[in-house]
Length: 618
Image (cartoon, rainbow, N blue to C red; front, side, top):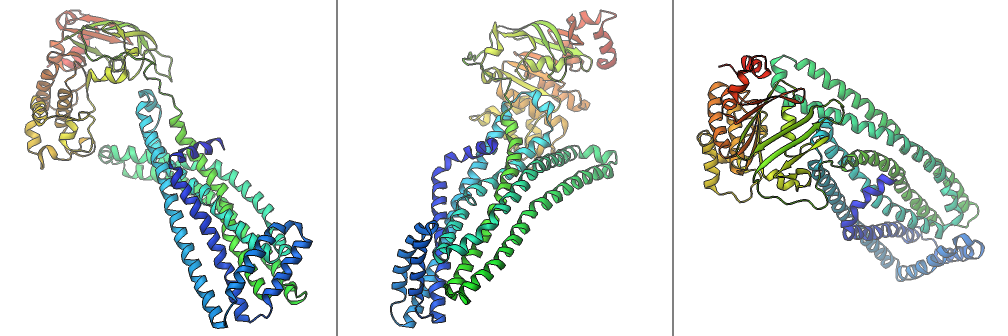
């Protein structure tokens, strides 16, 4: 229940709407009972039961004297019913019938009005709570370090914030509708039944203990299976994400049938588990209904004796009693499913709270330093790093100094630690050992937002959004003038091809920029970095996958981007490497060579010369 209490804490901001829903639930339950009770005078009138009022009064008085269990209900019932019947049964038979019909119509009308209002206010609470939970989960994702996303499947995270949160939603109505309206409905109908015959009422309630026991047992099973079900849906979402993003490779290798079979296997596993849960969940309803029928048959026999043999109960009262008891069955059945729904939502909530409970390792200290300018130097002092799931060092005691305005090229074979070294600078990761200083200040003490504002990043895998070209270039800037935006696009060699798009700068470029070529996407990315105008740039393999024509245009844009900026360049083509103020060569996490292009090329047995001959020769 700890998880579920945490779910309910999200309801607090909506206390007013919840109170309104509860209030209308009470009125709904009351009017629901009144609408059934109104049948008693109607039936008495139609059956023309002489002395019905007097007989019932005597029965109630007898109940008060001999039966302490029903005293308080009987006293209240006596006062209300006597006053009501005195009013209804005054006048001619036609007047009495007209009064009863009007009151029945009014009772049902008000009941439905209150039912609508109760449902509306509860829906407001449900949807508001789910919105807040989903927003909080999404916001928290942005606080988590890059290492978290390396270990989690994208589809699984999407499933938690979409499917699992939707499952949690049903539990709100389970508590605030079924746990308030339904018990009140049952209580009012029990009161009505007790006012007619306390013996018959107590007899009818014998079915509850075995029913509750069965439902509790079913709920425990459902909670376990619900967690598995959400996990299976996460697997399906992951597979969908991988297939859609990699559809070009799937088609190129003719792997449609293979992927189809993989998807069918996942959906079949989900199908089997859903059926298993359905078998367990649906057991509660027929069991409750069968026990209710057993009770009803016994109750009809016992009540029939009171009417036909003992003559202590009117036929009209017995019929109303039966209606009251059977009106209790739907609420009881609803209550029987509450525990199941709470167990299912708790299992889903646990998956959502796993995200929220993951502490972001990369975060601001209690009183971070505010930095708005980069003035002098970046230093790496004995920096070592390894990923959480491995003890193998990716970087091993790296010492490095980069002066402001200089271009540092980082070269090395795949897996040497080039990208990791650059990722430490904006604090996508923190070093396992050592320190990184910005103008003599440890970057772990600098406010993260300030630190990242000083940096721009252009990567090989360009990240663009399904928005207009304008919004992608101006990403993160609220007050960007048209002149600045166009100037950045021109500097990135992007202005001309943007004007040729169907709607120019307002053209939606598709998810990840799929409507553009690789070179065009890269130039949009560079324009974005230019517009941000950061003093520090990180260029990671920015031209490695482009054709020659695109590479020339992108390279020109990159040279403009690097002008008067401190730049970290990872394994660029020869022209950029040649122009770098300094080149370091990484091998197994260590700097093994350091110098300018000509110096490193002159070292015959050096790694740089080998890489040059393999990768950088024109």
